[in-house]
Amino acid sequence: MDEVFKALADPSRRSLLDSLNSENGQTLRQLCGGLEMSRQAVSKHLAVLEQANLVVARRHGREKRHYLNAEPINAIADRWINRYDRARVHALADLKTALESATMSEEFVYTTLIRTTPEKLWQALTEPAFTGRYWGASFDTDWRAGSEMVWHQGDWTSKDPAQMVLTADPYRRLSYTWHTFGPSFAEAMDMPADQVAAWAAEPRSTVTFELEPMGEVVKLTVVHDGFPEGSGVRAGISQGWPSILSNLKTLLETGETLPESAAG
Image (cartoon, rainbow, N blue to C red; front, side):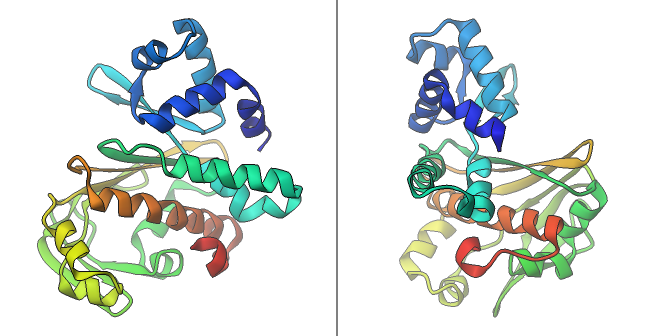
């Protein structure tokens, strides 16, 4: 966590985070235009923030966009928060809230480093024995591109031909379309029927898991995209993914999931 606190100690880097909090997914040119810093200075500060995993950069064609990443703060809050004094705890809680409530772009991007192997992480993403523990969901599929996925979560089951595996490159990349919304989902999840109906009217989104070995850890990047402007589904998944991925990381590194209060 030293890199995180070092990155946050500089006011210029905090300004960059504030800028991304106001408008996530900015290019270097956009960030330079909104701050009184040279392009070189912004690049250097972004490199430090990326090293601390507070910012994730992704290419879109010829552009490189930058996204806030709440994972390091979630890790502190979920697993080490009792090591800090009360004032620091409040500061971290405020920062965690700010990072997770950043102005939403058309995609959700979240990166975490997990002390595991690509093979074990792939198992955790695909096998019900794992997904049921850290997510509460499981999938009936053969994990081949084009195969249908039947989604189970608690007493709710979703079966739809459009609910399918898009890419399955073991230990490297997994992508599938998101589940179908309907009245049974609203009832099972105790959600307002009108809210779920609005979600059902949106285009079906896609989630992609990218696995990159980095020595003793695996860098897992989750990209959930395909949302229209003002998407209710986008707002919902941005609250759910941090908890799911924090629970996944804890399970693979410790063999146990987070307590319900921490995971929620």
